[in-house]
Amino acid sequence: MPKRRVRGVRALEGTAIVVACGIALAACGSASEPTARSLVSQALRNARAATWVHDVQSAIEPGHKFNATNDIGAKSGRQVIAIDGSHSTVIVLHDMAYIKGNEKAIVDYFQIPTKHPAAAAGKWISLAPTDGGYAAVSSAVTIASDFGSVTILGPLREGAVVTLGGHKVLPIIGHVKGSSGSTVPATLYVTTSGTVLPVEFHVSKGSFSETTSWSDWGESIVLVTPAPSTPIARIIG
Image (cartoon, rainbow, N blue to C red; front, top):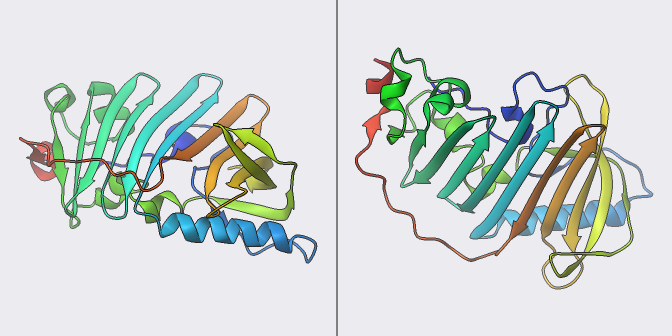
């Protein structure tokens, strides 16, 4: 079964800091941060209620680099991923997942246990919800999964308003936990006018850096079922 490292540097094997892009408010902090907490809650609630969003992710640490460009909707979406020489695409549509990648992606990223990865490279592979790898490959390709994978921990505080992508945004500053239990500074930027929405999430420490940005809220894309495609069971078998 494919065991895809789904988000950000979770795709970087052996990384010292393991986080994922997407936001969830942690139940921690103090009475000094109610406004910051409220803004994060509003941003998440509004994001999860959205129909579509364009999502760009990047992560870097010594020896590893990850990039993904995503268009994600409520029940469907598309990811185009590049990591350490592997290149792959994931489409979720009509309760099916479809994956395609070069040979390195078949072996290292999707980790499909096939004796002939070269034969599977460059071809669409389909997974139904009953397939063991479906949850892994479909994660982060829909609105709900995109905004349910990272916790920003308190105490939270507001920074000074800045401009990102031509929009005024308010930084909400906190931290996440690294895989070793270390504290990693994190900042969520949210809009300052209109509907409160997340604009960017940045996590960095030392030589490690990860950023996710969201834009084009509500702008859908047209997805079509990839054809032909081969069921994952046939690839494994």
